[in-house]
Length: 209
Image 1 (cartoon, rainbow, N blue to C red):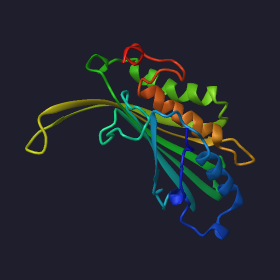
Image 2 (cartoon, rainbow, N blue to C red):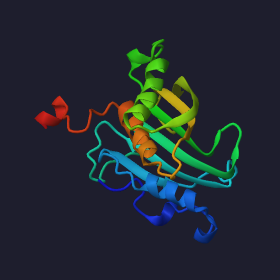
Image 3 (cartoon, rainbow, N blue to C red):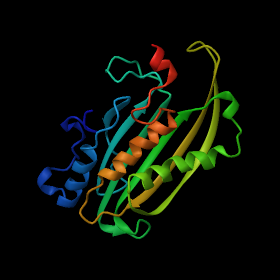
Image 4 (cartoon, helix red, strand yellow):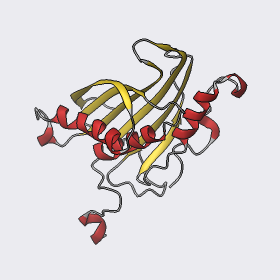
């Protein structure tokens, strides 16, 4: 498995000598996370106005993804973004100098739409991933939304998409700047939302292929 960010394209925009060492350590610890092979990782340009320093990455998954780099993930079943924000002066709302922001969108089966328990279940994907990876945190909050959309017109045939969207942010608790457990928890969140089996467990379809 390759690191969460395999190249230098995700290096923060400021010059290395102007970036706080703690932020460098945080980015390095996130970039060193090794996700499971079914997940496709790409560096992102982080939003510049949310904090003095920021970094971002996208993680996508498809239930049928082989992990060999040959799959077409133009429309993945599940996609996620993780953004790291750092303000050396701290922000009152964060109760710290770092903030992690994530967004995950996953495809729903038709029978899942309208399930009153789905938001609770989707939120538990995040909280359980953080707990299992011992990713200590504070001021965790967010929303879970169910959406439905239908395409029309010449650009695509009429097709309905039902999705669940999770948006959350939290303050990581790591005095030494090691945010690796948080990166691992985010990858686990995306894998769970995609319906991937636990690592080492093969589905019936995989066993018979």
